[in-house]
Image (cartoon, rainbow, N blue to C red; front, side, top):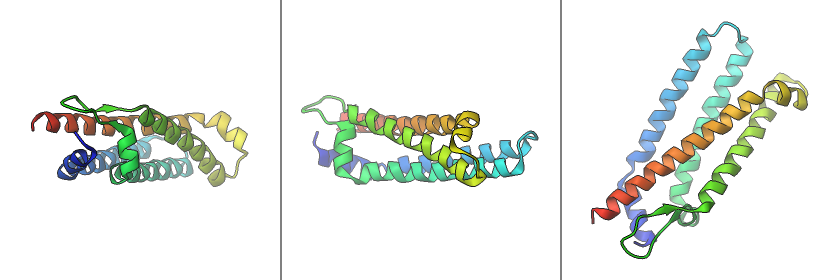
Length: 160
């Protein structure tokens, strides 16, 4: 299977990004509604959490879209075998996912620090769970979406 075959398979299966968008929209709605009913968090914190979560989801859609549009990243994320073997994930995928997660962790802490006008170390000590939850969300969504695409590619390649 060549890279061109994989690109054709991904072009035919455009619903993956649509399903990702629907999943992220529903999860954003659930998070926003759950934050609205929590009484112990201030309104400013609720707004910060909602905006960070929605922004993260939009960036996730953009990142996953770029993975499929960039041939260099596509060929590094998926390992294409020579003949009649299943496509697998490369180490580049795990490295890329870890880098995204760490960047989002620190950017989230930095964003909260800028919005609340509090010292960075104070935010890191008291709101580390927010950065960690965004980091975990990045790992789960990117891994799940890439594995869904991998299963789709392998299913379509064996049907030929």
